[in-house]
Image 1 (cartoon, rainbow, N blue to C red):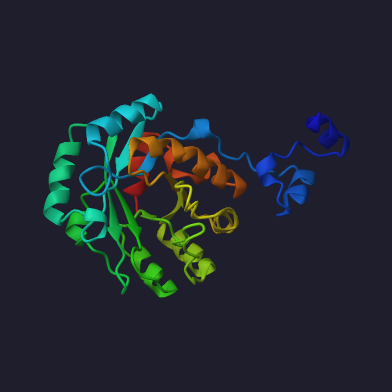
Image 2 (spheres, rainbow, N blue to C red):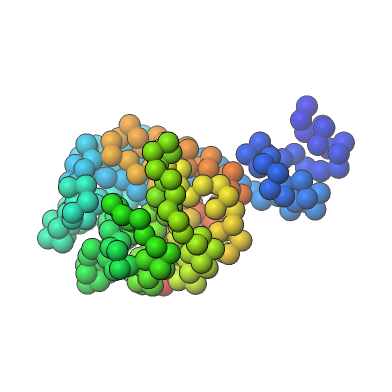
Length: 264
């Protein structure tokens, strides 16, 4: 077996996702391989859109699907105006009023990062959310744009940080190490977007960000309940990046997650 071969070589078995010549042999020889995250460690999905913006399904049907997936919680993170039929501040607050009746649903939002690094919602709105994802849509940001956004204390996660769409759009030209440093400093998580055309962050960025002590959030960016099963692609990408359970927000229980995001 594979395990026998590794044992004869004097090292523990290396999971296939780590076999990328990124230091796994050396780590194995020193018995320092990470205990990489598993699908069963995921407590919920932290990036879901509903029919309130550009999604296809109702909150009720999304909650039902989450229960089928045995999630402890989900975050509803609809777009803000003008992206994706996004919500105005008034409509967002109306949606959050509806979400108050669901104990297992985080009142979230995917807020736009604007060209100058400011945000599409006022802080007095953002501070009422359980989870705020800040994302770029419709332009190519500079590194400074992302750094400035992370300085806002109401931002919990940077969504699809490099902006790539596989086979369609390449990554933004960003200084990723500066972004990892700022994310660690501000305790801002970086998303591992599980949408199959994104997978953003990708593995090499996850591994490097982990070295800075950055936390991650795995979200499907679902626009239909069928896409909620894509969480597995985010987990596989996290595994390739050496991410462990302790590195990922949605491996926390609901109370621990809420306490964590509101502690900074």
